[in-house]
Length: 460
Image 1: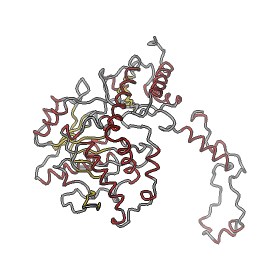
Image 2: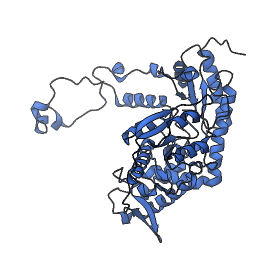
Image 3: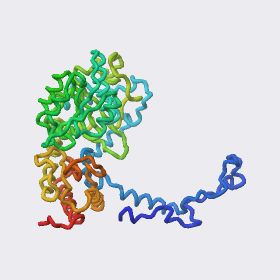
Image 4: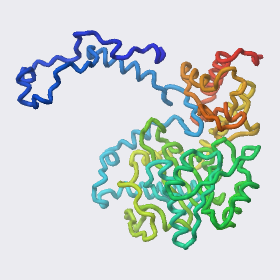
């Protein structure tokens, strides 16, 4: 059944049918006026649908079955990392000690939570190659804002006016928004023909007005920039700092660390990388981790250890201050901690290796119908061209839903400013949690829908 086949409640409505029967005489006119101001009572029917209770329940149950999520099918939404998430972590996050914690509790009554937070901070620092971390930011973009405010605070502290922030043109849209909110003027660094940051263009943009460069590696194009050490040296040579958007960290865990690449600050999308289901308007968490240079500016509170005691440290005179009323999304952070402990160092590395392997497998199997925009090995996601379709790529993507595969990210859908193959490009991230059988089934759906949406002239 498709969404087009579902009638609305108004279409199903039948006069005189009721889902509830009120038999209390006190609520019958005119006695109802003892509870309500008569001038506030309606004098005409609302016009609501008239159905039985069972019809209403079945209607919304049928609609729920049309909703797509990782629990009922592949969700290869590029850049968003919509992977399957272990249910055991949901169970752990629901333990009463975490579930019932109240933000207004005295801090000394939450020592168990602070201990978990302290160790999660340390794990995130080890994974990212940073010195210290704060778990406060509510999600990725919030973490971006926190990181950029720390960069601004640093230059204010050393009395340097650096109003410019450089951002790669392949960045997530939130990068520029966060930079503007933090008070910076944004400048875009172009991508070269290989899909990497154009280092020659970067050279022309670096001067003592630049506060830093904001990028992710691998990029949203699914490519690892092998020039990252050169880029880092150039930015630091002009006195700027390097910001790492951690949206694609699931491609690197246990293999490479942003801190070792020269990045000074990173936000981590724990709701993408470490277990919590992503999307749908649910809670996120975007911890920020920094090197020693930026450590004094971390938003508080940071959890510290004194002997066997763990407590929030609020004595941080250079901190950018509180950026959230309460301390983090507990359930999201507990899930992240459980995920990391379950897998360990080797397991996290295997996650990244599988994510990269799956994306390259999908890229190779679809190359004859959807050639990669950049013909080279990808990382955790692949950017494929829809140029061989004889219909709009957006129509192709929507038709995937009828086959229980969520559409990939449409890079140029509805946009006129993407050049060449990017205008019809699809960013596909199968994630590490899809098995070989699942990948093969997804590939067959892509191929079948391709021929449904074209004249089949490329079929062999």
